[in-house]
Length: 96
Image (cartoon, rainbow, N blue to C red; front, top):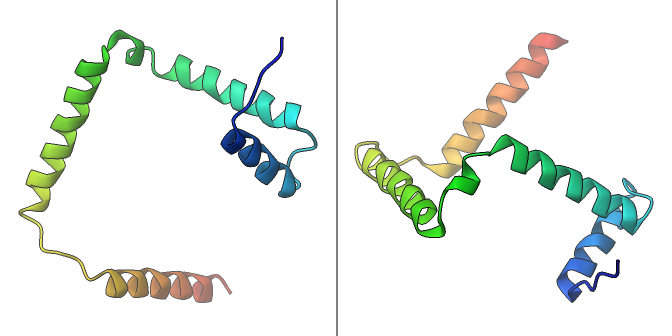
């Protein structure tokens, strides 16, 4: 079998190889195919949806999330991150 990769796919594989986690392009593709197989096995109902049914399902979930967020006050992103970092620092200190 011969496979032609797009430039983007080739760059993706090269990026993965540069991390040092993979020894060859074949290994990257082997992992990708294994994950694809796991995904297909984990989501058996996904194949039962038509594209329009899936899209309708996703839109309904997004609409529900937006409706829920309308009743939730906005979060200050910087304060939220600062709080999380503080919790990590406290947890680290209690572990010492």
